[in-house]
Length: 336
Image 1 (cartoon, rainbow, N blue to C red):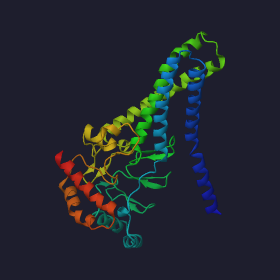
Image 2: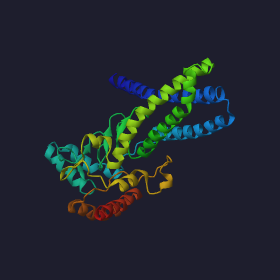
Image 3: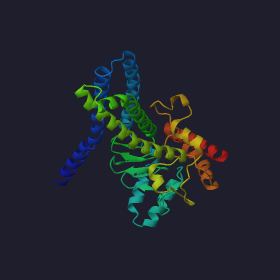
Image 4: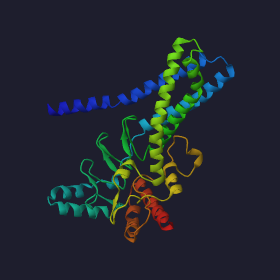
């Protein structure tokens, strides 16, 4: 009975979680109708103006829709199998009742992995629900019920976790949303003023255009603050979670532990090919399991080099890629 009730509640939660997305979709579809039909087709009389407005509007609308789609339907990246406890390690961990002994078991396992961050207590970060050692910057999302690589936050407006797999898409979604609102506000303004003083008689269009102006301006102001905040986070190479709680390393908390400088921070999110920066295709550097550090201690550098052979011996090709990325991380850190 309890299990059936729990499943029913989870099902209801999944259904209700789509309500914010449906609200945004409904507002955008209405704005499309109001702009294309009520403004461009029924109100504007100049043919050239009408054509230019429609062309630019559809470019903005297309990029907004594309980035919103990618933000919603890009599944959150989760830790690979290398970070999961093996059957023997899991048995040993669960059979051990002493917390200190369990902590030591996790430390031994973590020595084989490029993990530099710690819990607030100084222990290895371990997720009991997912049974994985958390890679750096990875956190468990209670809504998605999984550990998410480089988790930033869970956004109800995209009904998805914003993290390593879709953070670039989310930033572009905010940027193109602002562009969409700015364009609507700039082009509707003159007709808004004409309707306001009664210079245009079309009553149905008047309602849509007045309301379109207010909605676009309201969304622009809200998005401007949110986009500015995330630009600051990218510039400092922080996630929203890290901005509120500094990541803890072996040497202690460090709010700028992943800050490599503005240029390298941008490359980490958008990639090296600048032609693809403003297109919603995945170009972020790395694989989300670990990231270059601002300053590398000899201890962490030796850990990566000592474990290189272990990773090379793995049969999993993706884990072999982790070794190459780890070596690249060391190179970047030593250059700094």
